[in-house]
Each structure stands twice: as C-alpha cells, then as structure tokens.
Length: 137
Image (cartoon, rainbow, N blue to C red; front, side):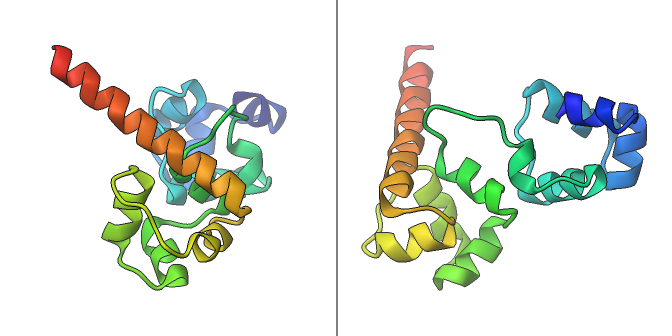
C-alpha cells in the first residue's frame, strides 16, 4: 500500500484525510502491524483509486477474514448475503464452527469451495496456535 500511496504523491496524513481515517490507521495498514477492517480497506482503496483486492498482500493461505476483506464486505454484510448472523460469520472465520453449505459461503466470499475450505482451515489453525501460545505463558 505504501507504494500505491507514494505513486499517488500522498503523505500518510493526506491519504488518511481523503479516506476519512486516522494517519495511525494508514501507518498500521502499511506496516501490517494491524489488519484494517473491511470499511477501512474500502475507504483506502477508494482514496487511492484502486480495487480493494490490490491492497491485500498476497499470502500462501489467506484466512476467511482476508478473503472477506478482499470482497470489501463487513461481517454483517457477508452474514446478510449468506442468511446467517454476523456472530456466526465471526465464529466461522475464527474456525470455531464449520458449515453445512460450503458452496453458499464460498460464493459470498467470492471464491470456490476449495479456496474457502483452505482459508477456513488456516483460520482454525491460527486460532489453535494462539490458544497453544496462551497455554504456554
């Protein structure tokens, strides 16, 4: 994102002002220290004049959250598309729950069943790793 911002000739403060976010939010998004919300990603993409997907860094196995952010939808919006609660989307993205209608979920995330399943497993593994880390400390 830094490259896109610099190519547009904008400082972090200028991009933040145009996107309606704080300069700290821009810095966090650029450095990867915090993952921006779908709303912030949409605002930054709009301010930079690029598709939302262009702001998402390539990853080996993205999580469902990353896939959803690429669509530019919030958990609530995704839940409306699928016909479930936002809480359910949150729990599925965290790998806490599985789903019966994988095809319907994959469609809402804009990917195929195989990609969606791989992302769901990545989220579940991340949750397990965090739980294991917490148990050791």
